[in-house]
Image (cartoon, rainbow, N blue to C red; front, side, top):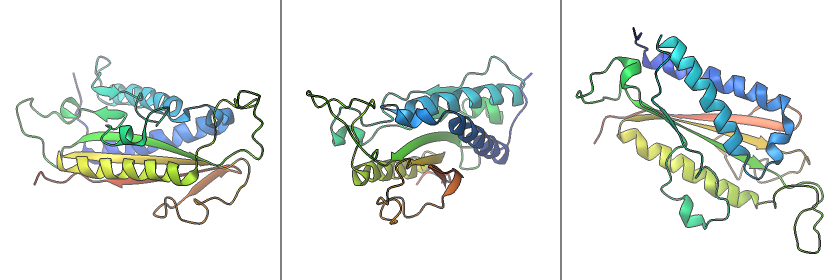
Length: 215
């Protein structure tokens, strides 16, 4: 038998799940050195959320969490490809809230979308081989302002989906192992963020987008 959750409970599950992921991330500092760290972080987050929601709903067969991190990072694509992408984690809440399939969803019973964005400063030194491939790292640094533009795209997209109605959560990780003073530190990027610092080289912030009734 499925137990119904409430919207405040679901929001707490997401926040608590993220704090668990931050602890996991601190224990694996090399995650931020991967070419696309968002994908690994999102996979861990989605896996934890699915397990927790199945337990709380008293339904081990529940599987209405949709996970697709393929477009979570820019990768080798053009900037225009980042526009219009969907949030990597989407939770269909009908079963969790006990909503009949045919009933119209309201802002009091929204779906939920989650995105994670990683900002990272350039290493202290970037050593390239004769083919311009980094010798000691798996990625080429990206300009912080470009990273900030992609972050604002996440903000815009999550704000847009609140009319569906759908709640949105954006979690931002800032890795600065080289201790540079970047545009993030100067408040030029993510100027709205209130940062938490769980380690010497890692900060995180979150932003919640409340669902609205469709216009």
